Image (cartoon, rainbow, N blue to C red):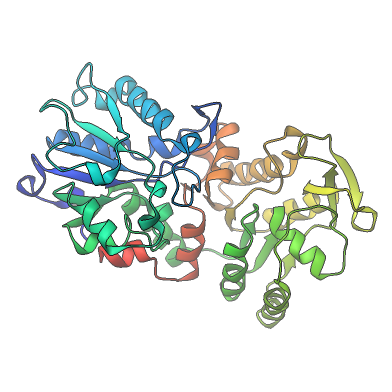
Length: 406
């Protein structure tokens, strides 16, 4: 895999660079709530600016399913990136005064390589949400050819999207010289270190609400782990499988067979699975939290966090672990009444990290958001903005974006 930072000046200077990044950041009222993913691409952008390139940023936010949705415009993200570049000491000498990060709203069919930049002084443009186009998620070759025609070289700095066979991640590399960016390379090096130098006992905490994308991952990770803790929306499937009422809680249909296989694998490889013994519920997402035993959950309840007994057991498992992989919150942390489980898990890992008794890796946007809320990024060995890609790489799967660069 060729890295952009290892290329000679002649291969980069004066080139138009298609830079694929993951700026799928949380937005509220048209403002960026968490800028972690933006900050992680700054090194690549500064390197490209120092090498006198013009940068065409490609990214997405949300799931518009191939349709234009102004609520999912990249406009606030372009504005935030511009603000960060203007205020960053690192970019002081390469990001000229008065420079903007201009969002190109035109349809791709109307854009050419020659018309993309409005002047010779313009350095950075951002294409509108790439998922507004059906060809992106279909990994359409014609769409990839159109994208590739806008630049001279392509840089993938979106590890967190590299488990997707999408046009701007996969097929585009067939039509343009392609390289890995700084952040993508750093993520892979860190994950390789984890898999080669990992210390046992290893515990994986998997939570969040994206259920179907992780169920198979859990099954395949079991032989490599000593403990698995399943929390968040993920755990509701297990409770339902065990015959426990989960009320109106989020769940995935038709998971019984894979859950049965998970428990069989758990027994075969002596890797215990921990899941909630008690829960925090509400009648809606804005409700106050109520502690309930599993046999007390009624048909109107929504499970939104782990209960105190479960939390106590989870913290004990963390205490006895030497390596922690954490992907996905324990509850609906957007409501502070249901953020307790996630925050206490984070605090326990931080405590162990500061005592130099654990190697900790956090992955996924929501989990990173929790770590950020505690201002604790430095108290984890590695923080990855990737969620699904993070787990699939650890699982040993080949990621389409990485395979394409190779």
